[in-house]
Amino acid sequence: MRIILDAMSGDTGCEAVVLGAALARTRARTEITLVGDEPQLKEIFVKNAISMDGFSILHAPQVITMEDDPVRAVREKRNSSMSIGLTALKRGEGDAFISSGNTGALLTGATLLVGRIPGVRRAALAVMLPSSGERGALLIDCGANAECSCEYLVQFAMMGSAYMESACHVERPRVCLVSNGTEEHKGNPLTLETHEALTAMREAGRLNFCGNIEARDLLWDQADVIVCDGFTGNVILKTIEGAGMFLMGKIREAMTATPSTKLAAAIIKPKLRPLKKMTDYRETGATPILGIAKPVFKAHGSSDDRAYASAITAAVSYCESGVGERIAERIAQIQA
Image 1 (cartoon, rainbow, N blue to C red):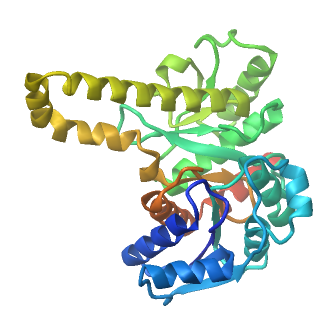
Image 2 (image 1 turned 180 degrees about the horizontal axis):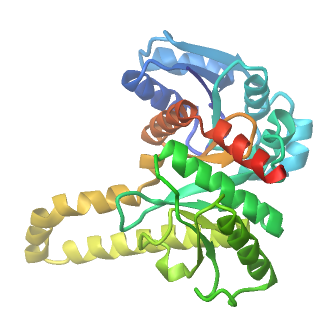
């Protein structure tokens, strides 16, 4: 399996990308194509005494920055690491593409250069939220589509359900719709229309729709797939991330306040490691953009070598799970 990795678009520099790719190679014998400034990348290999066995480089002299307008950047920066990497994916030169760059540009480039699965109206970002259960819950969409129609949200539900079945081996994933109340009459016009449509899908036996879910219940194992528009999803995601960092910071302050609390901290620290791991984006590495014809992953802009290694592992698992094929089947059923 060959993974194409954008080496230039993140906030931490291309050395973190190379080190993360090398770390991933020690876990699985994955072939990796790095896209970026070739002389600079080769210098990093030499500097860190990393063998180029299993690696190849696609030279890309341009970079799409976080400040670039997404559509204009994709159209004008044809020689950027992101554009060249996505084009290589389209041509079959790799099995998946990963970038930690501009989210809007990545979504636009994936749509224009790689294309969507036939029948998919909008691709969506999907991220696993921590949960009180054995596994997390998939939040879809979490930032790709600020404005949505009922049709988009129904497709998000189908794609998210297919993902949980294939990638996480969940039978009949519980699908819930974000609203301001669990009652079916709660929500804005879009929520009400989507609730009705998802209920019809459930009655037709195509989806295990379990009704509305409130924000306070998102982490309490009440759903496997959580559906909302990208604006709402991004607010939810950033709120959870901020709350997690705030609480961990306050716990750290309390544990280092006095000699006695430091002693207590040493005792309970092993018990807190799973909680820290649960809220650490480096463990997940990257999130898939569901609905694109070939696997495209968005990594965190501040990814370090560990995060990039996790992203590569996630991409390999996704490719092996057959998620894309199952999504295509489900969308074709809706179209029929």
